[in-house]
Image (cartoon, rainbow, N blue to C red; front, side, top):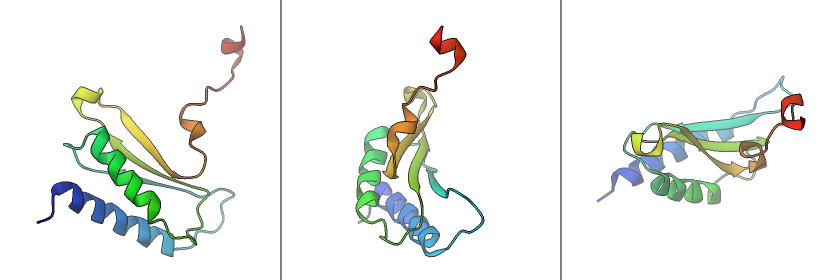
Length: 103
């Protein structure tokens, strides 16, 4: 019997495969962001899903970066959480240098 997490993974994986089959033109940088709509998910279950998805990204995907996001539960402050599947994950933690930061 499939668990809800298995069903979520299969749905998101299907979206990933569908988007990777398409070709996108007219942009300098093409990123893909898949958002998991599962209000009862938590960081551990989405991290497991992201790990599985990372291993199944087609080699000919054509994206500079691929991210999986979800909105955390109230216990997780209702913030959008980001998992990097392909590309540079540093943008999620890199602090932008502004005049205010340098003072």
